[in-house]
Image (cartoon, rainbow over all chains, first blue to last red; front, side):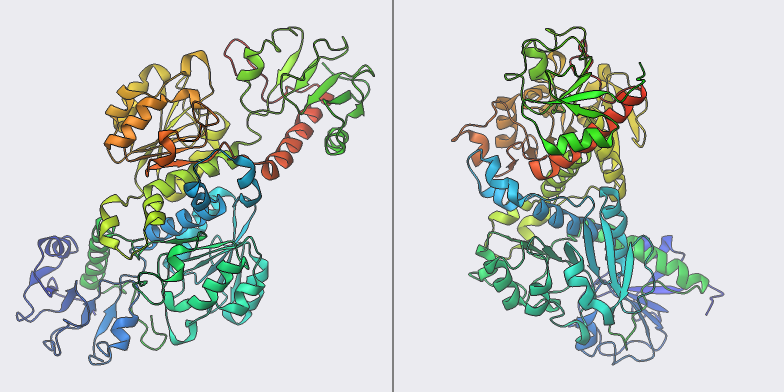
Length: 311
Length: 311
């Protein structure tokens, strides 16, 4: 669909000058929701989303990269006539960088170093590894996985990606289709979980998978807590089945006070802050500019939500 | 100089099958020190080094990347007829990876995260940064600095290198000669110290330099402790003049128990283990193969010690 006039785009739930500027930069005209907009840029959650929208609205831009809350809440289903786009990809580079920080911290035993108060190099020697020449299993090669691969390559690590289709992911040393994911666990040295949360990915990584990994493996989760079986992880970390875990997401989330993960010396917990506001907002604004530009010219939007796949 | 026969090369202070194999792989013939060797591969320190060597020896391969102990002890001076090579460059990639681990851990506030036992993302938000789009000042662009630059580029960081000559370093966004180093401190977002320890680099980074840095800056030292004024660093870390420091080397070293750096929450100390034996020995063996190959064919050796420059 193309426009003979600039598209009219509302921002909600609250007006916001930064987003109005982004709409103008993309070639749109900011308007209120009751002024017959063609599209809506939403900066809030599903709870505040309007039960009904003006019939003029054809596209809604959501602020999250993972949209399972929007699907589970029925919000998307309640508006079947709309095209929905997520922010998938907008935050990929910053989350991938966070995943790399967690992985390198694990491989270089920084948690144990930070707990030390004496100069004892020989105690650390057995726990120090390198990503150079190592193989990192990347579960899910969407935006985050694809952003991570060149970072790993710069350090000399190989990427073994697992995707739904198994089509070769650019830069990955090898790509496996998800049907062959069981080959991944013994083959890779470390793992980054970066797949969407769907019914099919719930507890994708559990006791059997940890048991198949190398005891030197670090597992980093920057996707959603639901992809990892937390009890099995606590067990694997406590018994040394794997070397450690870096978690930006947990299940349950927020992780309650007193949870065993807080006190395990080989768990690094970051409270879903891999994409903090100071980095998130500018990245989302650029994403809005991009999609408004595409909307105005009738081009395909980026990060269109696939309601059947669930992301 | 070229050989009409394979060069004879001794290993000291103790015989070692791995090094003898490396000599054979490089086209040399292993022999004992009293069997008129052409060269000596030394795996020990300066204290055990022979006071006199057979006149047949023309080249000594040392096991360390930084050779200031060998120069200060007078060992090199006592044998003016010899060519000395260090292991500079052999360990560059693994030390650069360690520097990156420390830098990313700082930028992503992992020390504070590891100290937490409650899910409080908003407390971390003000302290979370990114290397993407940031400028990393690299003081000294020898092997480590040059290995680090492509790793940083993979994350989207710019490198601002400082070298003796100021000749453009491959991959660096800009290179400054050391005379202009004062421009570096306010210009870069973070710093990696990777210059050799010489008389000219003692306390290169002190109170004045910390004061010129951004308060969000992390300073990583993977070179030698002597390059940083420790008292000034403790002060800068305590007062928030800079955000934090990642130190693989310290002054004094070993860092004594009870030193303030151990208890500062924004200091990450790794006890000179960025290049642990499990990674060091294979890398040094490859370096020996390379230099024996060059020695046998009369090619220029790598990492020849410049006794006047001090590295």
